[in-house]
Amino acid sequence: LIMNRKPLQPQVSWVIPTPDGDFVATYSAQGLAGLGFPRARGRKSDAEQSPAPTGLAGDLRRWHALTVRAVKAVLAGQDPAPLPPLDLAQGTPFQQSVWAALRKIARGQTASYGRVAAAIGRPKAVRAVGSACGANPVPLLIPCHRVLAATGGLGGFTAGLEWKRILLEREGSLKR
DNA sequence: GGACGTTTCTATG
DNA sequence: CATAGAAACGTCC
Image 1 (cartoon, rainbow, N blue to C red):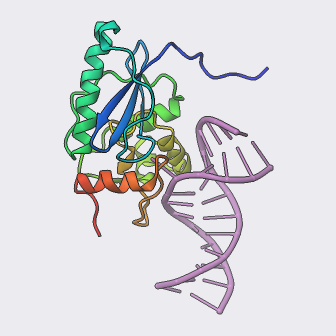
Image 2 (cartoon, chains in turn yellow, purple, orange; image 1 turned 180 degrees about the vertical axis):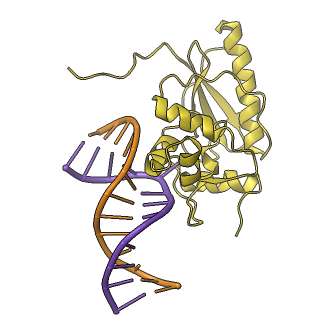
Image 3 (cartoon, rainbow, N blue to C red; image 1 turned 60 degrees about the vertical axis):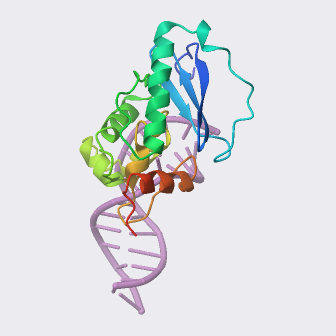
């Protein structure tokens, strides 16, 4: 018998139009559970229009308003607070500890994968930290883009290195 | 088993 | 100094 993933809760996805394209926010009953990048940078999503917000629960409406504000703030190189509640229950304990560490990296600052590994008390799990960053369900708001390679390189970025470069540039963290 | 958003250590020119 | 392995880690395929 193989352990399956935790059962998926009912979730609602909602589009966030921005000058950089349409992001997609996904909510569970606990909070924001996912944030997706635009399919093509700067382009409108070709997904069909979501149902009107009038049908959504009050919590969801509030959360989404916060998410929209936060996403636009980060895209403008500004601070996203306050955030909606985040539902990170899908992650393993290790991943959750990594994501918690990422949230402590302030805007305008960066860290290396090794530094994050040390911060969570697993100094040798450097590579695993990289994987956990890639598994971050809420990019932008959990700033995985602030983790760079120790050698000075950008490291990787699941949504495309171009995004990482842009985000870092906008918060003034990119030295060249 | 293999492959990752890496880092550090140990050789060897 | 530059370059080349190798090991260590957690998770997914």
